[in-house]
Length: 333
Ligand code: ATP
Image (cartoon, rainbow, N blue to C red; front, side, top):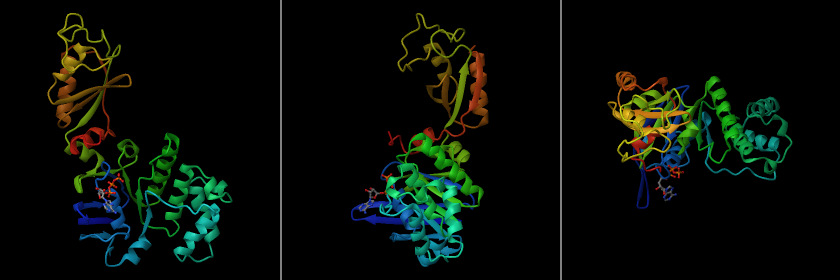
């Protein structure tokens, strides 16, 4: 549905894009992730026909975006990171305005606007002034107006930024519904947690270059960071490590202690092959381990051999934080 090939963009001294290449399959929700200044907005603006690159090509389906921007605009809906919402308009007038911009026939418009407002849970706000809406509602209204011309591809620049958790969940549900309706979605964020649960694919951009791109699980594997959640009977705090070799009492001081984790448990887990890091999470531990299924199996065998009472051992599929930190050198911190 979308192909981006070798995009280069220079702003004065700043080389913002250094040959950005990636593709988004029909029906995917592609999370475009990178730290601030990585080049996300610049890339999305080129795709949305709002910025001319210095080199490279973009195709939406078979439409060459740089050569046929009008045809490209008919196929894409773009939601910028900062958007004006014409405060003196009512929600209905706002939608009518965009329907006019896209030259939609007036017949059937009422129904179309009604169904779009329904989709974004704003049907009861049709007569409200736009400036009376909350931030989350404005984001959803902006999403609705991106859909008036029934585009195949949605390009959304940080749609979840500044939203509270509930509003984020609402946004996520709407995007899932749009996917069910056959839309392809490209969505950017610098916060992985916003994207982790909703995307089918991830592209990580860093300093103007794509460092990883593909289905979520493949990206995780390629980065070599699988995250396994481990829970022990009785928790992982002091006393849980009976049988792990060294008890908490009298054990030599751990040079890298982890708050709330029994040093003996920590030592036993860290001694397993391929373990990169151990962090407490909820009632368990998150263990980042390098490698494939064999590595995960070896970790479990090691924990059991070490006498740890493992009651839960499962890969955390959506945790991309480690992947992101591994590929961007931890700069987001
Ligand atoms: P953020 O997450 O902060 O929005 P981003 O990944 O979207 O960041 P861009 O906005 O594409 O990144 O910026 C990429 C680089 O280009 C940055 O170094 C930025 O300072 C620079 N840049 C962006 N727009 C301009 C501009 N109009 N003029 C000069 N430099 C710019």
